Image (cartoon, one colour):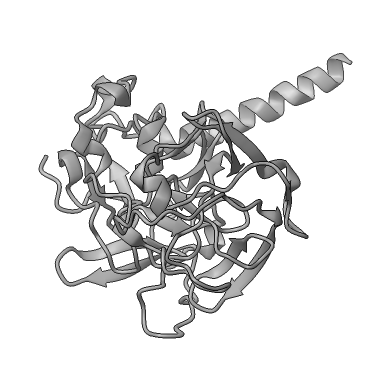
Length: 318
């Protein structure tokens, strides 16, 4: 028993040493947020989370009694990738102003007429998907709404037939749901029928205004938060902030092209999420970026900036 415990402690020590070697050196002068590492996003200015925008089309057409979702299915869209649908093939959507942890819907009144909530009653997970992601949330009126990975699910009143996805990207806040509850691929506004680019997990795009910046495998701009800390690694973006600035999921070091692999580590966040870090800085995307090439998160709140291939803040003042 003692031998096993000693071996376990040794492995832990080696892991900590590796992280310290990767992230613990020369960070004291590079961490502009190190004095606010424990700051709560609740105390930040609202514009730190991005511009506020409407819920969608503004239509107030009544849709009648909400239909049960029944057997969920997965639609393989050429423009959006894999999209979750109800049993009749209608696209299911998620709303950036909702929260997944804890689950909460912020779509009421006229919003709920344009985006009818999907009832949580007769629902079965799509074949080949994780059934444990299917859940429910109680709305303000007491009804139960379907959730996926915590995100409340909706239909769009203007989708007239199975396979329609007219709600994709509406208001910069509504997106078709992927089978895991994440947003479907955001290239719907690209050339008709265009397939997603075959990019590395992290790569470099030359932006006409910002120069060389890091993008993820979907081509979406990657950002850093000025209030984060590189070592000891801390994120000041939690709770509602994460609905606007989703974390970049961990990737493989050999799936990186043109971007530094220094401090290429996984950040085990206190909220349970795992986040990619480069040069020991946690990295994010912006929910307001609708398609590859967008940089709408640049400079938001004076705290969010695109990332250079060396993991530096692009265009940020000292």
